[in-house]
Length: 502
Image 1 (cartoon, rainbow, N blue to C red):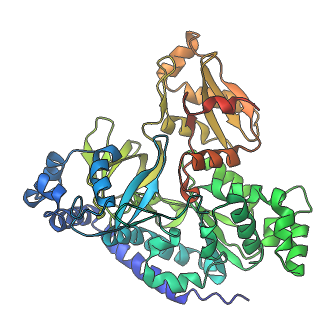
Image 2 (cartoon, rainbow, N blue to C red):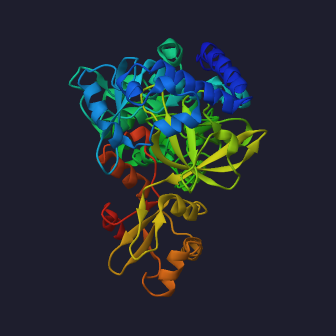
Image 3 (cartoon, rainbow, N blue to C red):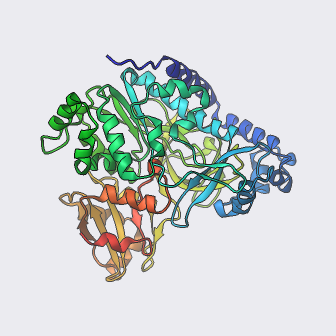
């Protein structure tokens, strides 16, 4: 029997779920009221005065007075805030920054207390709904993503912290003691700077927790990479275990595949991203944990929470209590959540209580239906990641759709000579090349380039360590290990050439 006491945590999540359910009963009105609160609270900060927040009376006026920006449009103000200047973007004090990475390098994202509460208003309702549907997950200990601190502790020139201790920080300080009592892996491991040492200590802690009942992470590649490191670290991990634990691990490793049920017989579910290019990795994770359910995660970026899994089937709804969410259609027209059309894709623009106004998040979602008047959303990829060797105009979201039907992890890498693409897979599947080629040909520009011989036929390379290598690639670009989003497409200039060798 486990000694884990979920009661305080479950009660808080249940209350949050009830509040979120009430907000969904009139989602668009709730969003408009949230916008009114954001602009009135920040009308006296420099950004609010510059854009005349005091005169904004509705969403339509807000769109007219505040242009859409990416991170670069906020960077000068964020730099001043990092230096200690107040009232640049928000009337509320910034309490910390987080880094978000990419090919352009690390970028700072400000957090206020109210902004962090926006994350809490998405994460706690999701957990409340999930526990209600799957009560067995609350019968043992939990593992929440804790990445190694691959950089030294940092502060801004103004003395503010860069980085939160772990994903648990998004849940609020009042729940910290209740959560700490449930964790199978101590949060202190997040302070380890060496990824190898972190892998050994994390694996040892997990193997010493046979009552593990719930795992929550973002990308499934995180857990795939961690388990993939076990064979290489087996000796060091075994040395940290009790005799009984050593025997259990040795028995679990005796077969061709790791016996995860022997290690964690109480595991009820693993929550992770399952949409877009993550679909193949999630299926591989399910194959490694056949006794546990894989529960889809919503879209939560460093800047804002966007969607919340809600109800059976893992369908996601807008995080209407967290931030203002705009859905921009193919023509660039902004919509609130009440006018979305099934089958249409939308680019996400958010406004947060941390001082990001009409911030172009760069994520694409599809409206896959409605539950009453509330749209159901599915993440399909990243906008702005594209490849155009000869005019074929492929983007990450479209390629992710083409690869999502594959059973295992895969990525599409561009090559210059001959011009074309290579399908990189962990485990080749019969007919995979033909299926992906046919899916890519749904793009008329790609189909034309193939007919004209401008693009070579799709190639195939096997990389048995694809999950691990994609994780290393993300770390090298400054991204946090815990929330790496797998890319479907590696354009030229992104290091794609290195993936073309088996």
